[in-house]
Every structure is written in structure tokens, then in C-alpha cells.
Image 1: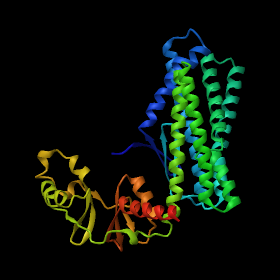
Image 2 (image 1 turned 180 degrees about the horizontal axis):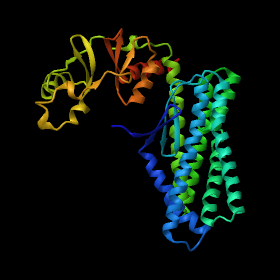
Image 3 (image 1 turned 135 degrees about the vertical axis):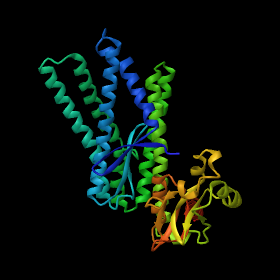
Image 4 (image 1 turned 30 degrees about the vertical axis):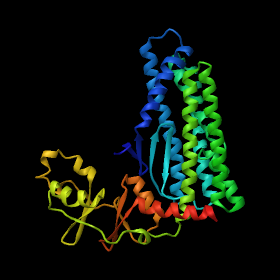
Length: 376
């Protein structure tokens, strides 16, 4: 099941919204409409507060998107492909297809985000002064003033030297330049990130006990997210190092069980899924690879139609998201699986199916190598 929905494409970069984004979007609107704006401008119609909050929240997340786009554009200019940007529970993240190749590129990418936030802060500050000069109503001034403050806060917050915040990435680039060791640099920057995350969660708990529910929940959520992100980011770097040089051909399963395109779904279940208990199968016709059929695809079809519907009608046709070349790196395969939401890739050579690679195959090797390195 997909965890995000496609929004738009900007500069050739797909923008998705994770479902968790709507939680924070609603919380921001509630906080503004019930807490911030009524205190700044008392005695307005409640509907006006809600309209102000919705408009401000939209512009806030547009600002966060601009922050992430700045990272992405710098990455693209330095030949680092971006598979997309996802807006999620605490803003957004740009999906790099590979790690920066040098400390200087990392530094430029990391600095671009806060620079954009501070630039937006200056723009909204100037807009507030301009509107005030021309006698604009207070509700407009409150919106632009809020966006000025929040962009400055986002810029300052991201400069905190804890990975994966931008400040943590700047710290990692400097340690990386000094030590020439990306794994060590990531470990140190991640430790700072986790320390800061635990501080935020502790601070949030204190605020909860003091009766400041909304701010307490905010700090705990942000701290929890940063702690998880620091762990995942470090694990990703370790994984890339351990799996470096491992080819898809070294891990793939060569004896692939395929299914014909013309059989019905009830036959497919009986003869293949129940018998071999795999989650998906390649679809072949006349020795040509046509696509991939998964158990999820079958479950999307009403049960009474299974005897009439064929595999060809519901399979995932061959496309770049589900196939990979045998000479590709194992880390590239994992990245492709993550971006497509698929746990398996079809390995091809000259358009012919020669194997299949599962996420489990890659992770099994990673866990084995990691255990050996720990013992050493």
C-alpha cells in the first residue's frame, strides 16, 4: 500500500504528500486558529481565524517545500539525482538516489536549505512592513508576520548541529573533510542528532506536566522524529559502505519461477501462490518478459471474478521501476525497491529475464556482513 500521493512535479522533481502530513497540517491550522491568532487579534469572527490559519498553513508548507527544493536543485547541479520530494509529518525530505560524493558538495547542499528559509523570512518581513505602510488590515499583517517568524525559526532550527538536520549535515561535511571517513563523520553527527532529539522529548514531557499540552506534544513529536531519522540515516550510510561493490548478479536468484499471461487468477493462486508461497511472480509469454503479478494485485479483484480475469489483465507491465540490470549495485536495487514500494525486482540482461532479487536477499547479506564487522 502506498504511503503517499502524487501532488505536482517541479523542475522535473516529483512532489509527493505522505499521509502523515495531513496530521500536522491539521494541527498547525488548529494551533493558529485557536491559539495564536485570537491572542494577537482578539474579538474577530471565529471563521476569520480559521481562514487565516488555513491560508497561513498552506504558505508555511509552501515555504518548507521551497526549503527542500533548494537542497534538490543544488544536488541536481552536482550530478546527484533526486527521485522526488515527500512532504510528511514534520515538513519534507528530498530523496537522494546516492550520497554526496565529497564534503564540499554535502556542505553546499546542506547550506542551501537554511539560506532559502532565511531568504523567505526576509521577504515576508519586507512584505509585512510594506502592508503596514499602506494600512493593510491586521489579519493580513498577522499572517505575513507569522510567516516571517516561522521561516526564521525553521532556518535557525535546521542549523542545529545534529544529523539529519542541515546543521548536522554541515557538521558531517566538516568532519568528513577532516577525517576522510564518511561513516565516522555520520556516526558523530548522528550522535549529536540523537542527543538533541532526547533533549526535545524531555523538554516536551516537562511542558506536558506543566499543563502546556500543545507545545509539549509538538516537542515530543519533533524529538521522536529526529531520533528515528538520525538512526535511519546512519544505518543507511553503514549499509552503503558494507554493500559497496556488491552487484545484483551476486545476490539474485537465477532459477526463477514464472507464470503464463493467459491463466486465470484462480488458477494462478492454486498452481503458483499456494504451491510456492512467493509474494509475486514474473509474467512470461513466448519467452518474453511482460510484467510482474503480485498477491496484492489479485486481492484488488473481486473474488467472484477470479475465474474470468487473466493475469495479463491485472499484472504490472514491465517498466523501469520493477526491472534492474545485473551489473547494478545492490544499494541501487534497494533504493529502487524503496522508491517503487516493491519488495522484488526483475533482473534483466538484453531485455531477457535472468533472475529475481528480493529485499530479503540484500538485507540477509547486509546483516551477515555487519555481524562479521562487529566481531572484528
